[in-house]
Every structure is written in C-alpha cells, then in structure tokens.
Amino acid sequence: MSKSKKNAKTKILIYEKGRRHFRDHIGNVRGKTVWHPAYIVGEGDNVYASFGITHKKKKGKGHNNHPLSNNPQIGKHSESRIKRDMDIEHRGMYSKRPLKGFKMSKKDDEYVDGRISRP
Image 1 (tube, rainbow, N blue to C red):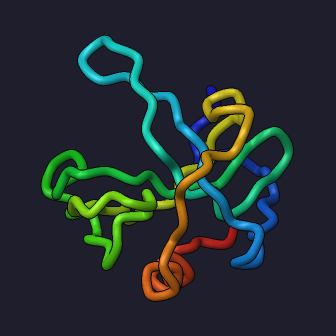
Image 2 (cartoon, helix red, strand yellow):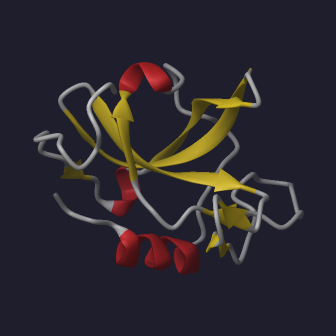
C-alpha cells in the first residue's frame, strides 16, 4: 500500500473469531524477500488487516512483541510472538490462499481482540 496507514480512508470489516485465519505476508529483510505468517483479522477494499507472527522479542527500537501462550503453527513448540500493532496492507502483500496447519489459541485471540484498532 503506497499511502500511509494513518492517511488511508479504507473501512475495515473486522472478522468474527471463526473467520480469522493465517496467510503468508511478504516482507523485506536486509534486501531479501521473506515470507512470514500473519493473522488476518479483517478486510477492506483490496486490503487485509493483520498481526504479524514472529520469534523476535522486539520490533524496531524497543517495541516489545507479545509472547503467545501457544505457537500457532500446529506441532511446533518453539516460542512465538505476535506484533502489538495491526497492519493494514494491500492484498497483494499476502499469499493467495490461507495457510493450513495454523490455529490461534482462545487466550491469544482474546489478546488480539484487545489490540484491534477499529478505523
């Protein structure tokens, strides 16, 4: 999305918990294209609203990521975290199909509910 998120006037429909899902999100790390799972919580005109999933404790300059009670990737037991801020980006930045083998725990979904900013 070329416009900043703060200036975007897109209305976002926040999904009910049963409709939320995971997709890969494309990013750039030190000049390399990488894909990371993202928890999709809503959509608007050609955009998704999501929270990034990571293993890193911090985002940027001291912004702590929230530890999840369970790794959302089924069968994985390594510590994972969710970014605190909701991202709103063009659908082209996400995989076309939802990821299989991912599930957010009820406890962690309650945390997400508290972090959703409703534009």
